[in-house]
Length: 178
Image 1: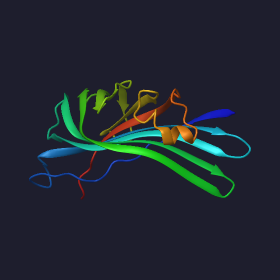
Image 2: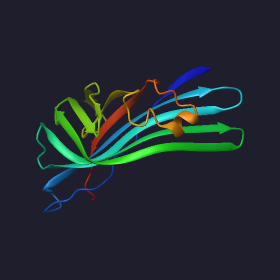
Image 3: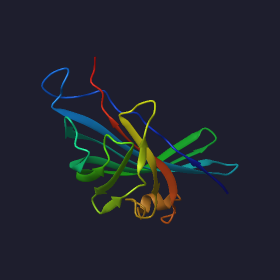
């Protein structure tokens, strides 16, 4: 069995809410964390993935550090393709009181700790994107501590509960329309 690492990055939205078109009272930020790994045999391709996503709002101007509560979606998925057959098995949940403690917003480096239920992630600090200065990105790992690693349905479809693989995280400010 040969393993290869894949990473997915998604883009944020285009929303701001506030008191006027030039100075919104709050700024929205999109958090996205994705990790995936594939194993391939002559009969099939199977991809395991983990993901966390959510939108949180901060006052404008946003403080350089702080803590915010928001709703976060957490997903663990197995995709398997063999010939013309494609199957997805997924376990997911929404944590309405996820907590994000961050520092470095507005600087060249952003660090954070995410808590969603019993799961806590403290990925490596990330840098600001040169192409989009309101976007930060970095690396993280999905492992046995990520939710649903012990899920019996996912296990029946081949998930190793001890599997650890790398991915990326991104926090991007939502952009006002116009």
